[in-house]
Image (tube, rainbow, N blue to C red; front, side, top):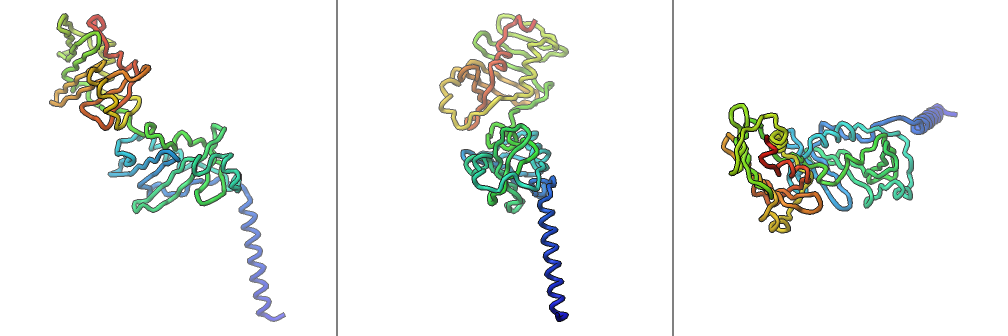
Length: 305
């Protein structure tokens, strides 16, 4: 055997050994990060299913919803993407590599929810189709161009949702309590005003007037509800459907501030215990609140004593 042949055989043996070692290592189970995107490079996130698509973008270090409309988002919900979704672990060994298992784990294009991460140039950094599981502790997932299905070691379905209501910021007004100069209320049973005066508040309804202790529960409920106005849901582009109801609202609230600004709220019964709320003169977006929020304002003089 020539020296040249020995060299070729040696190289071949080395390649075989490397192949076998690689194959053995690939069959050894390891915990790995499922997502490979560098969080520092992510500038856009898209979440979509067969019905809806949401797109978020980072602008001036803040995340906002940019599609299907532009709106502030719940920062706590976005934080979960970076603290719970991106670091989620899985085994390097898939639970299935068969396309026939797609239906079982709900990771088809029509059944799953797709999440994509983009960089500043709109290049895809990573993407996955998130399925559904009967387990509350795991989530099936696969890459769109692969048949391999992995079991993620956490249930992230409640985070990766294309329901816009789950992402939108539900606090639509925040004001300093000591900036409120007057609150005017017109409801079915009464029309009254309350305003601060030195160390107490002053109530008047045209029939009676009285000083209100700052610790009065009714007063505190109203001030708290106004200073941080948080809604339960959203109504988009349906103003015409509610126009007639809002022309004769069940509740009207006027808010005047010491800085010279003001806000006006109209609330009309929608159905069951839900009310539609119009903030100022907005028509593109309206809001939903429940009966327990509305009842905080339907008061009479005796409630402030």
